Length: 467
Ligand SMILES: NC(=O)C1=CN([C@@H]2O[C@H](COP(=O)(O)OP(=O)(O)OC[C@H]3O[C@@H](n4cnc5c(N)ncnc54)[C@H](O)[C@@H]3O)[C@@H](O)[C@H]2O)C=CC1
Ligand SMILES: O=C(O)[C@H]1O[C@H](OP(=O)(O)OP(=O)(O)OC[C@H]2O[C@@H](n3ccc(=O)[nH]c3=O)[C@H](O)[C@@H]2O)[C@H](O)[C@@H](O)[C@@H]1O
Picture (tube, rainbow, N blue to C red):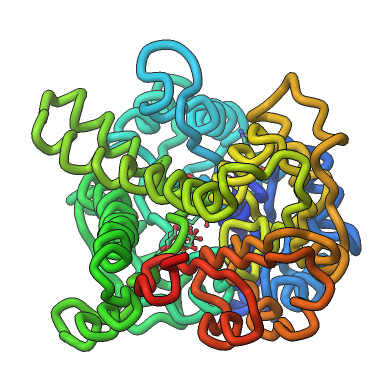
């Protein structure tokens, strides 16, 4: 007799929900996963040939598993009621209005999932909090669930934060450094933890860390805070390197070989972007403000301050080198996504750098291999609602069109194709003097200089940056 698949459901068909469910289905032939989202357009896209965003290898799994063990749905009642275990993977953005605006976390979507789950659940469920949340959100979830549960229905809440990075989501999910599961110290919670552990059947038991609920929630915020802090730390050193004649990339190598420091996340550049680092730092900072931990607040705030500074510093370098006169000049912007191998532009440094330059009157010709024109224009318009962007911004479909007749190239995303730019040919089609401002350590500065370019690359010695 065929075994009945274990039914799970995921609320939120985003960057975390879908890759997570895809890999769970890939690894567990006995699981049936339904991804539900309130956004009907997004679900329609997941069911179509044009998936909502680009993530390496995701499309292959979707094609292999869709409508076999992986389903997409806009039917909340059916998705929830049929599942024994429910992942919450909805957004937890920073609040934009009211008390805590710009800092605290907006828990509207989290609460809406709790209310839906309580309303539609006719049987007991395990609830897996995967979204990144303020510490103690699991208690809040529990309260809303309990207060609205149908008679005799119980919920066991686990915290199971996600550590995958965009652009390598599938690789990270297939081979995670660790899986963290938080739960209460009760018999039913421990049983639920065992069930969740079984779902991660491809992960070595030694890499599964079990904790209490609040530790698990705080592990996630701490991990992102530490990673963001490393980026700000190396960017701070980049500024010192530039004025002293040292090279930040040599420094990164020199310290990264110390096994206590390690080589990762020492890439100096235009600062971190992405939907999470800043948001999660604010989440942590607000939590500390709430508990009146003034020194801790000041400590973590500095990571964000340094990140803003790094973007502005890059723009100041452009203005300094180009004699503070970029009005009406064509500037080629190569890369708009917040990092390579993703179409995601959320909080991309490119948005803020482009915005500064638009305000200087420059004409930007933007090219990104994956971010769409619609997204790029939407991001820029959000910062300058009253500017007619059509006059100053063109989004093109290849690097050549962006570069042609431009006065300067800005490399704002570390896409591999920018490493392969033919610098000699590039030089020929640009206005002179031709500038390259490398925000991602992508080009060979020495070679570019030899060809005739004026160059600036974050954190490299004055010998290259002195003009
Ligand atoms: N993007 C990333 O790389 C990572 C994100 N996270 C965290 O995971 C969470 C989700 O992030 P993303 O996937 O990037 O967000 P996202 O914005 O891509 O997706 C969230 C989805 O939730 C949907 N949604 C809102 N309310 C809903 C409801 N009541 N029921 C069902 N769906 C609902 C939205 O329509 C949206 O499609 C956040 O807390 C984030 O901090 C954690 C690790 C990595
Ligand atoms: O919670 C999340 O959302 C995720 O946030 C990050 O993942 P992600 O934002 O997708 O990408 P990262 O590779 O961490 O890069 C973040 C930003 O830092 C920048 N960065 C990264 C590394 C580096 O050395 N230098 C640097 O400037 C990147 O260009 C990018 O803009 C974390 O790496 C994940 O572990 C976490 O799950």
